[in-house]
Length: 325
Image (cartoon, rainbow, N blue to C red; front, top):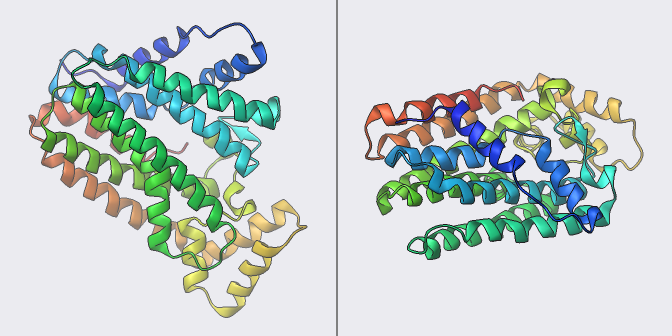
């Protein structure tokens, strides 16, 4: 049988709700329960389940790695929010705002350890392969975050560097989720590899859409502060493209806002967004999103399962590309 997105979302939410963290010290474990209780898309575990389901009706074998992937993702958010000085996550205070910076670091570390506790519960015959994928991906995510921070100090970041950064920071975990799910479903190495490539391309498109929503989204839907990337000088595709193609006058304006130490947040967001509007960067970003989405679909086309098994995955990823949050 093919499980629906709703079926799989329910499975992962039930599994997360049933996690039983130690009671003491409460200051270590309460922030973990808090961040996991805020929901989110559950994108990575759902994709792991869907990948398994392409090849096997028994998706419950993917329960433990699915939990591990969700915990790892949320661990990265605790540290990411702290480094970005973000105040809102999923419409609620970030962990370092609700508690403090030290709590975000230590609770995040505990989540990483917990993720490994769940990932090693996969069957022994696939454990080495799954661990290799998971561990390689974990290091790649750290590399991506470091590039992201390094880019904040640069005004010469190229589009190709940005794409590599988001491949590491975002896309590889989505791709790994799909590959791990495929391995557990008994997929061939070729099919597991194609699903990994599918995940990379979908992940790139997903992050580009996230960057776009940071500027043009609705804060109530998006769950994060609109304009947060602008305020923190994130070298997103929009800013990189703006610095590349705008005229000297607007380039100087952008650089003034990027280097400013004291500024009015609303004024900075409005000034930068005005330049983005003049350059039609919203449309340019959508074109790049479509490019990676179509590349992903071509990879999925080569996966050797019947088309009806792919329908739910296609519907789900199409909805991701058209999301408003």
